[in-house]
Length: 457
Image (cartoon, rainbow, N blue to C red; front, side):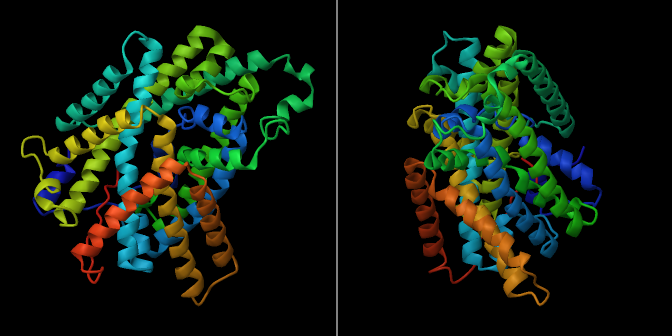
């Protein structure tokens, strides 16, 4: 077993990476990171915002992510080393803009454990309804923190098994859906097209608000670029894998939510059950058994995601701390016994607990706020690709102009359609980061930090 990454950094001898990953290895990694049940948790939030047009929002989000994925792939050609949005923006545009992009990424990492804590607590309530939600939130925030403090990791093999298990559950769900819909042809062709467009409930504003949340379905595809130093022929395979993962995720997610909409229609979900929307759909299609199967699958997936994202956030903060971008004494500390950034794990765990309570366990607002930083980073990558391949390259084509502009424009439109609370809190977060960076560097006259985002969560 290799030495823990943090211990290697602390010893001053970072790991040497080998180029052993092929195209299909990258595609599998991307699907595992995103998860085959990606839209299950946010289905109810999107459905209520878009008045039932969930499949439409998933497809629009896929278009936005495809153009952004192309930009990621092209920037990976230019910088075939472990990195991400902050690297591309910082190297291609300006180090200060790279710092701002990195600060937005920090928000994503920190908020992911928060929304997983809320979702796990509410899914557990479906199994044990007598336990108060506050108790469950405290339990999951504490459990994620304690397990990560002990240095427990989820191996890649376990992730593969979980992904296979989730795929089987999706197949079971489709089998029940087909049985439920077998005689629905009697309703006419309109019944099967309403999930895409229903004139009685369609609203452009609602669809765009829903799409701003639907982007969360694809969050994680950009992590493929962080494996650049371990990929055979990264200048080709990073782009192909990123685009293919977006397409596969979009197609599978669209089929899942299309099936759910055929069963449920465009009726709104109760505010206190919005996180359990997909299990409720499953219950209508397959009764108590399918409800509990989907509910348990979502719970297990989000427990793994919550633990992994908390450790990923702690490692990111550690990388910033040891580079002295944020107070090194606190954030750059490594526990000598378990080789984990203990202070950061506790810090992120506290944010997950306090944030869940402060947001009144509102999963939808947490998802909106997480996408605030993600969409900013995506816009930055599209602009970086535009500058490098259209304005600076001698071999530019019209596609080097159109693709990143479309990616930027759609991401910007979705960003402006985030909830007012998410925009307000996000702006406050960015203002704090920019003010801190400006003060420390005397107006960004020097580089604040070389962001060291971990290659795995």
